[in-house]
Image (cartoon, rainbow, N blue to C red):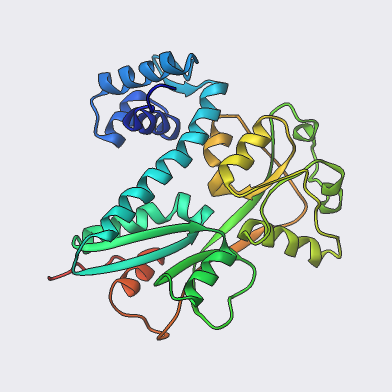
Amino acid sequence: MATWPDLAAIEALVAVADHGSLAAAARETGMAQPNVSRSIARLERRFGLSLIHRSTTGATLTPPGLVVVEWSRELLDAARRLADGVLALGDGPASLTVAASQTVAENLVPGWIGSLRRAHPDLRIRTEVCNSTEVIGALQAGRCDIGFIEGPDAPRGLNYRVVGRDELVLVAPPDHPLTRRTEPLPLADLADWPLVTREAGSGTRVALDHALQQRGLPPIRPVQEAASNATVRVAVASGAGLAVLSALAVGSMIDAHALVVVPIDVDLHRELRAVWPGPAQPRGPVADLLGIAAGRPARRSTQ
């Protein structure tokens, strides 16, 4: 491409996917509704693709639009990391580095950081997105102040607090034969089907391997591994196989009928944990972010 696509248009397209209409996307992005419509139309002309179905009842993503949106989420995440990184290079009164596993980073951390920024408008915040194993490594190496991970086991040598629970679901494309089952799929039968998974060390993969181990079953041998939820989602929607992912990570594609949940005969829940080094009772921004994640409002800075 001769020029890069407009990030504001990309953000508007993702907002349509998340909120179901051009009007809602306009409110979310702060753009005028006609500008949202025009920016997406420019993207469609640029890509040579129809990205959304427009109707009097709202807007829905076309199949190519669903794929473009998933790639766009990665682009927007990278842009936000760039903005945070540039901000972190400047001078400021205080800073906080947050590392989070991908599912938490994609779906929960942005809201938590927004609340923390309102309480501490002068705080410089940098975020790192990696898998749960890498989050723990960054904390142990002193590269971040607080982390958020998923998985069945508490980390050793670090303080932690459970801040929520997350459900894992088995998903398939709508035309997959398993979507017609009336009974839950036995976990032992999962190995009979091609499976796309996150990489080893991710909280999602650890939780799945743990559930298999609890049943005395061998680890899954996936047909494809990916380091991002978005890549796994697109692979499943394209027919590469089934996947076990967080319900948080696949909610929008389930709502859009691009993926279907296949019931399975095991309860795949996991705990979401905040982890941090140092004192068991943290202070300052770390304590405030921990409280926000646990559902308590932060105290507004008086500086």
